[in-house]
Image 1: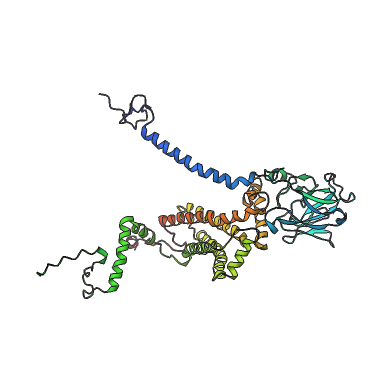
Image 2 (image 1 turned 30 degrees about the vertical axis):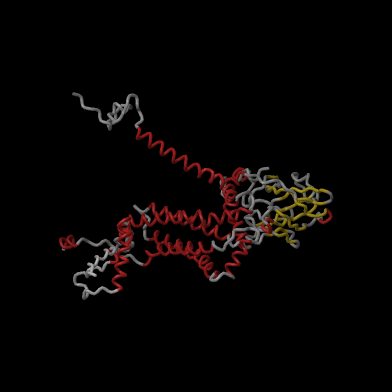
Length: 223
Length: 270
């Protein structure tokens, strides 16, 4: 008599009947034990995913949400000369009170100074007070004709281009327009060292060379 | 009326019965202290009979340690107690703190510091305790490194320790924003922007931390949730794994202790 096939045999048949599994029936390939194990694991995965995935999406959702475009009125047009900056405090982030306010340095566009080809359509130059190094507040020092950052010594010239210290790109700017004799300040944008425009990056992200690819525009800042 | 026979007293529950004196113990009298001690033993026995916890406790507490174990080996426990201090004081600070960007957060911290009974003390314990914990983590790491205690088979415990170090840093970073004064705000602006300088993923990490492209109304509550819910749970769980591996693998002898020669071997060599 030939020996009975062992269920641990490598050459065992895929049919449970051939493997002599108790309760097997004709044509069955998946045992009931294996089916129940798979079902229980699958149900566990579905149950865990049903709370974990929405929670994860809830937490990382803001990454994909874009910021709406807003205009803030800065002041009457005759308030701003074309050779010096006037600081204006505007609301940059609405809804959070004092924390959402920030200083913007504003002057009228001067064709003798603003010779770069990128800002031709804007009547006023609005420069942020946020340092392009790590985001500290810079201030315009009239005597030195420089923007100077108190944190790590970043220095910028009249156009906001870096002349010293650790910043990796010029100071960011804002879109401007004139409505009924009042200057309005719109969204922020970043510039590279040639003052070419990019969507608003965070401080510390260079835009020269491969920088614009290492720090790409992303959904939360794209307009 | 005939005198009825007295009913037998119902049996007292075990712990309340007077135990017989142990052989060779005292004069047979049982005082109230003995009752108290026996009551305590009975409670422990009741729990142990249903959980078998005493075996686990013995396994954890009564381990063999190598000769030469010294005060440097207490730095890990010291770090854990610093964490427990942070956890306990943090829970009670959360009873008064409000993560409200439009002035409420700063006001609640001012209220804790100036008006709450012992508020300045508990907040001080939390604030200085965080520095103590960071210092102790680094001392503990240095001890492990210089004693060579990270080598086989303890590499995984070193890896867990590094994750705990990073989580401690996350706690320091997220906790720094919560007082919401000028220093907290600008330090966090700088810190988030340092995260953002990582190429490709950095800007997305900044968006995640701020909850958007700008430092907004949800940033503070995000930091608060990470600081008091997400990371403490991870740290507590990983400390458990860290301690389990310490008990499982044992501690190392200090590098300057020499292996003792077998007594029989020494005899045969002489």
